[in-house]
Amino acid sequence: MTPQLFSALFVSALLTNAVVKLWLAYRQIHHVAAHRAEVPAAFRDRIDLAAHRKAADYTRALVLFGTVSILFDTALLLGFTLGGGIQWIAGLFAGIDNILLQGAAVIVAVLILQSLLEMPFDLYRTFNLEARFGFNKMTLGLYLLDALKGLLLGAVFGLPLLFGVLWLMEKMGDLWWLYVWGVWMAFNLLMLFIYPSFIAPLFNKFEPMQDEAQKTRIEALLDKCGFAASGLFVMDGSKRSTHGNAYFTGFGKTKRIVFFDTLLQRLTPGEVDAVLAHELGHFKHRHVLKRIALTFAVSLGFLWLLAQLLHADWFYLGLGVTTRSTALALLLFFMALPVFTFLLHPLASAWSRKHEFEADTYAAQHTDAKDLAGALVKLYQDNAKTLTPDPVYATFYESHPPAPIRIAHLEKTGEPK
Image (cartoon, rainbow, N blue to C red; front, side, top):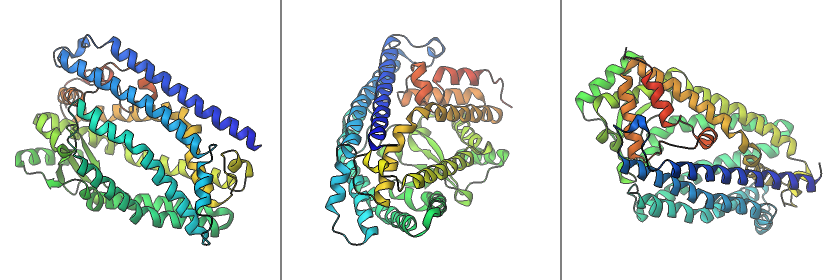
């Protein structure tokens, strides 16, 4: 392949992605607007018109803001690659004799510059868009503190990983990609173990659940489902946002069940049980393990592909880089990869929605399906999640089934067992 042909393929794929994203955004904005004036029949007795209109306006604002981000991200990637940005940054560190230090410096510089350029978008979303609809509770001081903590964590965990990967790419010969894959798997498994106890508490407070009646109910449900956890915790999610959620975190003996304080304030005891049963359904069906296995399998394939491109001049030149190195190959590959895989997104979304249906069915078998439906309606309302997404947009992006389909599925499950 020639550099010119690869450049043409890259630009064509990038522009195709942008057009598809903008088309999907257009569909979503207009579909939601067309259904703004009336609450869907299935929800009229549970969600009032004002809440429905708020969800429509919030969704449209998010998607419209997203279109600006699409254009910016497209231009930024072109600037880094064919615009010569990465080559220019690589030239700044060309005087460093140590190849590992030089490569790491280039990658870190690009990532930091990218983060700084994208920060205004994140600030606008947090302090304008989210605040406008009453969701944001974060102060600027807390935002900056979170950013600093994230930077420090990246240095503590990311830099050793980066140096290790670059060293393996330089020293392990043609099979370096197998060694890197092993290190990558070990690193991810380590993060699963240490995240609940050491990383998450740096950003939020996790207090053991104090409500004894609620604890007794939840523990009975866990016992019924044959699930063991290291503890039940309430997280102070309200200090950042009014959005509510519940999740499992950790792996093996470090598994924790975490409820946002905002969630517990809104749901009835039965609804809390139903939400928990849904999360238990994910573990019962081994969804987490399946996703981890798929991630590892895909990463192995991508690393093999990178190994094939490592010494291909057309790969570097086709992305606007005249200097060849393992660090630049790594950087270019993972910046360009999403361009060529974006159109596979509907497959991942469909797989995720299948898991959500399975978890809903499991919840309906162990709690009252009406409780889960009620909890979901409250969550849709509290999070201003639209009840009327565009079907094509939802098929492409949504990891959870659209509200009408999901609620209808629950209502067909019958009486609780």
